[in-house]
Image (tube, rainbow, N blue to C red; front, top):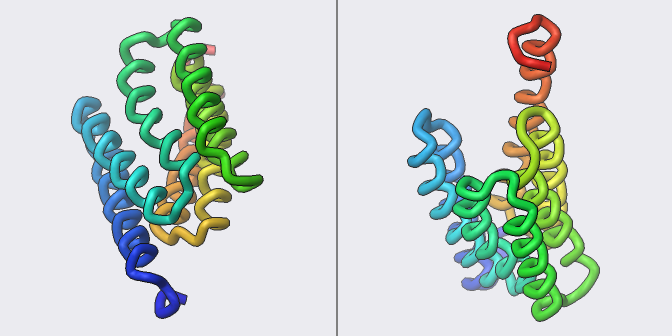
Length: 176
């Protein structure tokens, strides 16, 4: 499979693995500030990776994810900020749309934006799991190994965390 890759696609595969490593380092950190910095770095790597795969909509939306990370933390609950991010995502997709595959990054962008701006706890993680699933499908379709592994890990991690939260809620360890 890898022997048929052009140098450009091989570079994209390598950069996607760098993004995977940054995601793992970020999610394993106990410090929120370190997590956010590493997620920004990972998304820069994934934007470059999508450019190398000529997946323009995914690249543009991934760059907007960097902005979303900063805004969602600062403006949690802001319907205005969320709406602006959704409009920017729609505009970016309109200018870069190449075909049906682009529905997956757009779906992920919408779910991720809604989840991060207005949801918390189990509902947020369900929506973010949906976003990870959409990114996983996109990465499978474009042939990205590191991107597929990253999003599949995020998807499974979200499902495990949802299960842990449900159990904690049943035991009365979390508010209803």
